[in-house]
Length: 253
Ligand code: FES
Image (tube, rainbow, N blue to C red; front, side, top):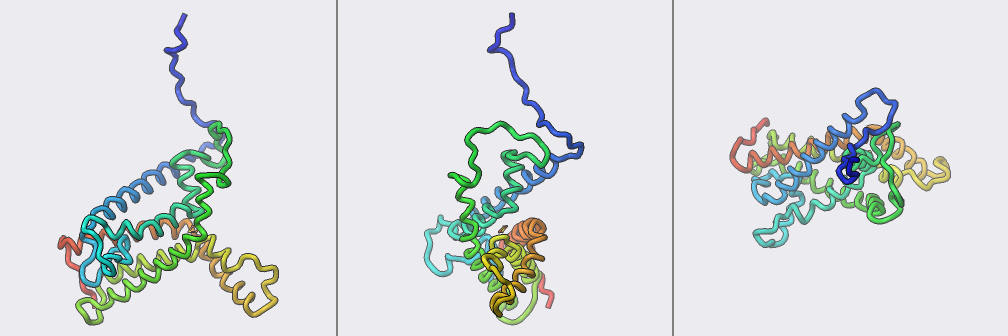
């Protein structure tokens, strides 16, 4: 008679009637998001090649080391990245993406769940911290101000007006991050929420107009989430290459 202790139970596949590759999206999300987290962490810890003249990497913006003396071992990126990282981590779209791709809970629409006990979603610790998103929004808006200021500074290479490839890279990054932030569900609610009558005052009509504009952006929130993520990585990589002397900062105008 077989010893029950030696019986190995193979994991069962999730039950579903879906015939499509429902697992492909979560797998791609897992690979890309993991890659970005590893890249951004290594770059933040690197603490060099993040600035050259008027060019500043978005991972190090604002550059706190310019305002206050920091010990040489402390990367200024570590002091500011909590805001944009926290904003993305708690983003409603990213929650859906990484709940599915990192913990498979839920796995996908129409696919069976793993058994779970005592699950209280975002009403209990630690997921209740996701509600910080609406407050992290204010910090994300502040970061945008600094990023656009970096674009302005990049318009003055070597002290006179000009446009370099670095200017365009930083502008593209700031533009996509602006679209990502302005398509945020929390911002949309902040602008148009808690109003009973949109037409009852000039202020409410203005808010309604703004809300409709943000709603248009919000419909593409996933697109802005991914494109802005790639833009941050590309902008940092470009500044890294220029600051380390690997490539020159091509002057266009
Ligand atoms: Fe995605 Fe706010 S919901 S940034």
